[in-house]
Every structure is written in structure tokens, then in C-alpha cells.
Amino acid sequence: MLESEEKYRQVVSTTKDAIMIFDVETREFIEVNKSCEEIYGYRRKEFLTMRHTDITNEPQISEDAIRKLVTGKRYKIPLRYHRKKDGTVFPVEISASIFSHKGRKVICGIIRDITERKRMEEELKTLNESLEQRVANRTAELEMAYKRLQIEVEERKQAEKQIKHMAFHDYLTSLPNRVFFNDRLALAIAHAHRNNEMLAVMFLDLDRFKVVNDTMGHSIGDQLLYNIANKLKSCLREDDTIARHGGDEFILLLPGIKYIENVHKIARKILRAFRYPCIINNHEFSITISIGVAIYPNDGTDPKTLMNNADTAMYNVKEHGKNNYQFYNVIIHASSFNKMILESELHRALVSENFEVFYQPQVNINTGKIVGFEALVRWEHPDQGLIYPEEFLSLTEETKQIISIDEFVLNNACSQNKVWQDAGLQPLCVAVNLSVQTIQRKDLVEVITLVLEKTGMDPHFLVLEITENVAMQNLEAIIHKLNKLCTIGIQIAIDDFGTGFSSLYYLKRFPITKLKISQHFVRDIVTDQSDKAIVSLVIELAQSLKLKVIAEGVETEEQLFFLKQRQCDEIQGFLYCKPLPAREFEEILVQDKHLYCSGEK
Ligand code: C2E
Ligand code: MG
Ligand code: MG
Image (cartoon, rainbow, N blue to C red; front, side, top):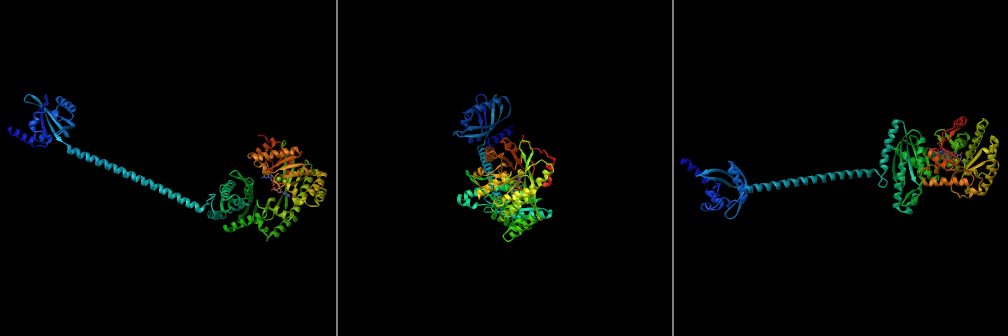
């Protein structure tokens, strides 16, 4: 027993923890060990005069803990703060137990100074925090670097794309450039070769663009080119390629051509698109375009030849008054070297009657009945098939062969009309186009009279369509001839009214019976305010001059509706019927077909 007490004392005095015993009632210290003195700085003697409350820094919490201890058994008290003699507050870990000693209830507390541990914990915490912060910073840095890298990669990709785009596109219009075009053309040729197809290359050059550029400045010139590029794009099919060749030149590739007529259509569509001015900064710029066409395989089987030949064709258009299109195979003969050959081909065509007259009905707008028809010439070329007047008339005007063509058409149209009338069909007027050269013939009246005599057609059934341009020369002589024709019953119509170069003076002087509204005005009649106004005005003008008025190029119900509303007398156009060879046209007359032509919406 003594031995164990001695051991106990030894443990108590050698332990590093402070051990203190105090009375539960009075809180007075009864015993403290050596470590208690060292930790708190009080001597044992001093302790024995003190109360437990003197060393705790949180008296209220200590009181609560003692109360709990009194009711329970051993109890692990959470971190506490005690005060030393010198006033230093330090963290302690306490374990306490309650027991009876000499009839009194006492508490034995074992107190461990955990200042160092706390410090280490704090240090560790700070270290951890700083480590976490550093990791977070580093992660953020890495994320930033990654993002920067991503942006850089994206920028590089964009730059590469841009460089590639620049290498193959025109900077101003963003259209493919020559390099790109050549590539596409080579591929398209290979494809056409494999599939036994045709393709067309068009060379386009703006007329008088240099004047705009020189007078209005390059900035306007550039904007104009940009607008024109868009205008051209809008005329093309999805598979077609348009490229800027440089300056005011563009090139088109039209693959998969089955019929040459489709190329004609696109060329005409482009020319039509250029009839309307481009508007830049409220200025109107009327620019026309000259187009040369080369067809694979007829005009070349490699890109270079096709491009050169389309270019040659384009130059030919320039020489022949610009604002038109031309096929290489047609003009090749017309170049100064071969012009004679084309002339002789045309001559041969006249001799062997390789021309054919097509007829297109003219219809009463209210009844939908055919009231007349127009004779339109076509050239049946032995190699190239049907050639439209637009392609050969300008050359025949230059060579004066147009006079023979007009005479041929007049003869045919009159004799054909007489045949139909003799066959018992309803008598109708035939309209024949006369060129300026024909009108200027001294023997015009005699020629026409002779044709009427020969064919036996009543002059009242003949309408001569002339253009305003006839009024530009020898006005008096022309008035004289027209009057003479009029007295024998022939009617005169002004074709393409409003598109020529003339004053309205001739309207008063010419014995006119009819005005023909050009298809140029009719085409956009539904959408274009100017065209609406012009057509309305021409109809009113004709009405007040007591002239008949006919609109040509009517293709849609909407156009017809508009014209009907404005009380136009007659219409001519694809909506009703396209120009047909005599045999087919006859069928329409025979059946007296009532083609749908209501004009109601
Ligand atoms: P034009 O006298 O104004 O003839 C009307 C033109 O419009 C014809 O073209 C006709 O096919 C076309 N047309 C008719 N309806 C429509 C339509 O709904 N839409 C479109 N887009 N076009 C339509 P074509 O036959 O090619 O004749 C063109 C021009 O050639 C004629 O214009 C006329 O000025 C001239 N021409 C034709 N035949 C002769 C002729 O025998 N002698 C003379 N001197 N000129 C002729
Ligand atoms: Mg006409
Ligand atoms: Mg016309």
C-alpha cells in the first residue's frame, strides 16, 4: 500500500502535466504537483491559498464543466484557456475526475499545456492554407495558360483560314479568284468529260467602268464592284462558280449544261439584271456588261483555251456596241479575219432560206382571244441549231443583210397569214419587225406593196413594228413613207416604246396606231415602283393619243393583273404562248384554243 502510494507520488511529481486537486465546494486548491508550479508560475504555497477560478480564463465555462463533472463521472473537457501568474493566457487540455477525499468532494484535474501543439497546429494550418492557396494559384495559372493557348490555337486556325481564303479569294468582293477558278474549271472539265456533258465559261467585262472609277474615285468604284459581284451571284445557280478575274472582269463557270439554250438564258438574265442601276450613297450608276461565252467541248477542251475563247467572244461584244453577249463559235467567224465567212454564211442562209419565221400571239387582255400575232425570225444554222435574232441581228445590221432578212420575214409572214385566212381561220393582223435600215430604204413603200400584191394579203392585216430609233435620221422622208403605207391601210406600231433614243415629237408626226410596252418595263412591274409608274404612264399616254397599247414579255398572272387594272388593251408573252414555228402556231389557230388568260387573282 505504502509502496504504491510512493509510486503514485513519484508519477505525480515527475509527469510533465500539471496535476491539481481542488475542493468542489470552495474551489480552493488542496494539492498541486511540481509541473503545476512550472507551468503556471505560482509556488505550491501560493496555490494552496488560491481557488481554481484564479487560473481559468473562462470562469463561466469552467463553472459549467465542474457542474457537469459533479453530476457525471470522468469527463473529457474540450480545449480551454488558463492564465499564468504573469498573466499569459495559454491553451490547455484538461482531463478531470471527481472523488472523495477526507470526507470532502474534490476534483483532480490533469492539465496539459498545449501551447506548442497549438502553435504547430496553427503553423500546419497556415502551411496547409498557403499550400492550398499556392495550388489554387497554380491551377488558376495553368487554366489561364490553357485558355490562352486555346485562344492562340483558334487565332492561328483563323489566320490560316484567312490566309487560305486570301490565297483563293478576291479581297474586295470575297469571290473566288483566278487560281481558285482555274482549279474548279479543271475539275469541271474532267467531270464533263467523264459524263459526256457540256459546260460554259463566261467572260464578263463591265462597260465604261473606268469612267466611273476615274470620275467618282476608287472608293465608289470598289463599292460598285462589290454590288455588281452580288448582282452577278444572284443570277447564278448553286453549282455555278463566279470569280473576279481582276479589275472590272469576272469569270463564270456553268457546269452540267444539257442545252445551249440554258446558257443563253443565264446570259440574258445577267444582261437584264444590269438594266437596273446600282445605287451607292444615293447615286445611281447605270453600268452595262459585255459577256463572251465559250462552251466545252466545242470551243476548247482545256481551261486556257476556254478562257481565251470566252475572252475573244467578250471583245467581240465590245466591238459590236457592248451590253450584250456572244458565243465564241458564232463570233469566231465574225472576227475581222473571218467576218466575210459569217457574212457569206448569212448570205447562204438567205439564199437557201435557212431562216424560219416563228409566230407569237397577241391577245385581247379582257377576252383572252387572239387578236393578232408577231413574226419573229430565227436562223436555222446547219451546225449550231436554232440561233436567236439577238445573236446575229447586230452583225446583219452592220452588213445591211438585215434588209434582206426583213424582206424574207415580211414575205413569209404575209403569205402565211393569207394561207391561214384562205383556210377559213379567223382573219388576224400579222406584225412584222422592220429594222432602221429597212425603214430607210428608198423603195420601202414599193417593196411592201409588191409583197402584198404577190401574197394577196389585205394591207389592213399588216402591222409594221418600228423602233423609236428610226426617228433619228431623215425624219421627213420617213414620215412621208409611213404616211403612204398608212393610206393603203397598213398599221404602224412603235416597238419597245421608251427604250430608244428619241424625243416624243415623232409620236405627233408618225401615223402610229399602236404602242408596244417593252418587256424591260413589264418584267418587274409588280415589284419595281419606277416600272409601275412608267407602264401606267405609257398606257395613259396611249389612251389619250387614242392609240392601242400592248404589253410584251408578260410572263406572270401578277403582271397580267396589273396591266388589266391599268386597262392595257393587249398582251404578248410567255404567259399566253411563246413564239412557235408556223405549223405549231397553226394548231393553236385551228383549235381556236381558249388558253387560260383570266387576269383575275
Ligand atoms: P421584239 O420585236 O420586241 O420581240 C419580242 C421579243 O420578246 C421576242 O424575242 C420574243 O421571243 C420575246 N418574248 C415574247 N414574249 C416574251 C416573254 O414573255 N418573256 C420574254 N423574256 N421574252 C418574250 P426574239 O424573237 O428573240 O426577238 C428579239 C428581237 O429581235 C425582237 O424584239 C426584234 O427587235 C428583233 N427581231 C426579231 N425578228 C426580227 C425581224 O424579222 N426583223 C427585225 N428587223 N428584227 C427582228
Ligand atoms: Mg417586235
Ligand atoms: Mg419589243
